[in-house]
Image (cartoon, rainbow, N blue to C red; front, side, top):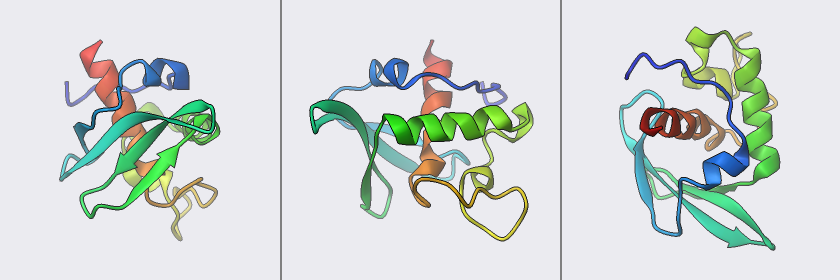
Amino acid sequence: MNNIIIEPISFEVALKYFTNQWTELPTPGRESNFLVRKVQRDDSNVLQFQNSKGRQSFVDESHWKAVMGRMEDLPADERMKTSRYGMGEFDFNWNECPNRVFSLYVPAVVRHILEIE
């Protein structure tokens, strides 16, 4: 399933696949792994991410929707390219990304969900 075409999914759908236990997933380029889990924060559920360096951040529904909007705007063959979800000096970069580190991991969560469905 390495050639799966990813499509945007809702935040509610994504939340259903995670618990308060860490799940290890491969990064978009599959060069390393990151952790994700669902946590309760401010009366709502969010996804908590931790990268291989131990840095952590939360992805809430508005962050998720922004990344899904970006994904929808991209051609299907570019949706798993990390450079399309982060800041940079090229036209294909996304300088409006909500988080320059953790926005990059959201497409990998989508890929994971689509692969196990």
